[in-house]
Length: 147
Image 1 (cartoon, rainbow, N blue to C red):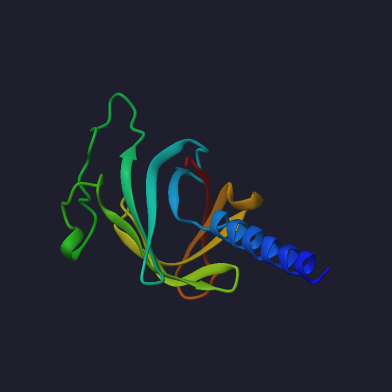
Image 2 (image 1 turned 90 degrees about the vertical axis):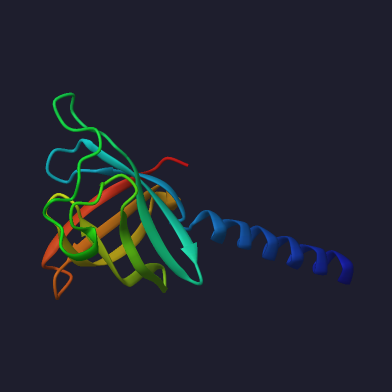
């Protein structure tokens, strides 16, 4: 009986750790424009030393738009850099079920915002909230998991 109980506890722990891994923002995400509802980019989120970072891997450009535009509205090290390959999400750390304390860059306007990430729908969607100062002064996009 004790062996059966021990086996059940081990199975529960292994199953729970697998679920926790699935519920991570690490992976490839399709960003959806909150104004047009069109796909904007593919962003790969990675984790290193407990910090999440996100880099643009691809843009969904219209035929009349440049395939890999430069961030002309950005300042500093981002100024005039290609958008594809750009680190747009940095410093995100887990805060309970959310991720915060980091920032997100919007290459369309060159501005950097504080950011909060929240996984939705069992990890299939990511709520990305960019804001200045207080969280209710900002905008939200929903990103869809690609892998």
